[in-house]
Image (cartoon, rainbow, N blue to C red; front, side, top):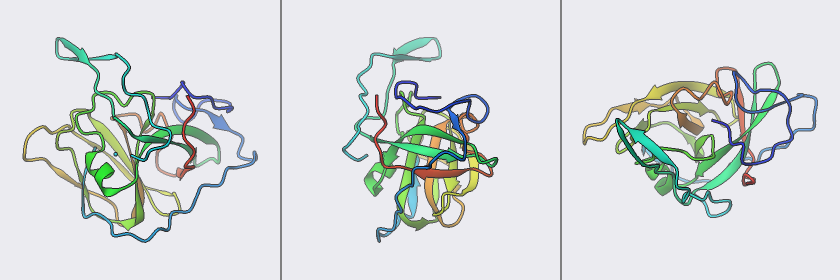
Length: 208
């Protein structure tokens, strides 16, 4: 799911169909290094916010549940950040992610959301390398999740299924990841978050 609402001066398609790619010889934008000391969470409900660059969630879009069409539920009050994905062949693409940057934001994440809106997904960023679990309690949107180490290197990815009961599966994370990115299930290929990729969060709000 590409965020066509913000301008990116990039060239051809990223990965298998979404995003934009650039020549790897072009000047790169350095990502900020995240080294703030803080205790990591031990259990992370899947489904987050800063204050700058928040996404307007008031659009009157709808989503279909069975035969019933209902107003879409979008994440509320989350900051956005531009991110650069470097593919295994050295090409890059730029995506837009909602940002869950503290424990409260990470715990809320995409709960109850039926549409991520104009962003490509949500990044769960930790202040220190982290190992734990994700779950899908109160999450109605099927998701795929990818994990990245402190250098931004891809570690692992898998799908997670909705859960609206009190007994939800917990999904073990890889060891010592720093950022996890959730997207609508099946969209990881579209944004290039696959084996061999590298992710940089730029901490620059997506423009719209």
